[in-house]
Image (tube, rainbow, N blue to C red; front, side):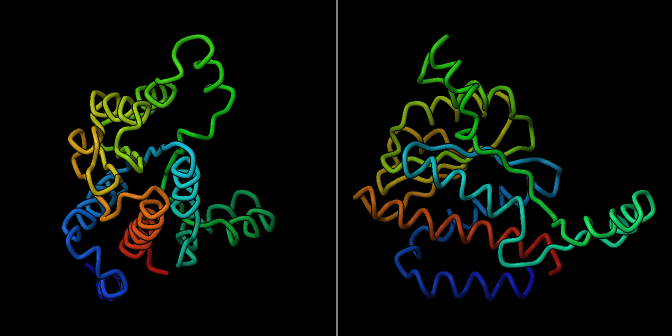
Length: 215
């Protein structure tokens, strides 16, 4: 672990003392994400309602700079300039290193078609089955742990060889037992669980960014 990441970790758990009981699980989720990105894998995320918005939010933090600038490697900047001249250099100067992540909540045409033609409960599972590969990670957010569409997607992702992270409430519901890493937040009230999820996934994003990028 980089010294910067160590400071980030210590600060996070100092601010959120209630997460001390699930520190192992939170760091385990960080490890799964790091392994996936280092091996060229991707993250698939989904949830319902506020958790749907959280899935989109996570993708936004990973696909561009979050706490760091993430400039492109020098060789890639040079390749842009060599092939496309000044315009290419200007584009390369603004692009940022991205960690591949997909929100399964974001494809309205596909989702509405599958809901209408097949089964609304499986709109995430269909995407998880199509996207997931060995080396990927599926992240399911459910404030109760009992969202059937998220659970079905976790099943599909596992069948395709992906690891599964679950963010749930204190009980874990039916989703937690499916997960390779289940982070059961120490709350039961929906909005409080969501507040915990926000803090935790911001930390996950900051942690992997710190480990994988220099600035």
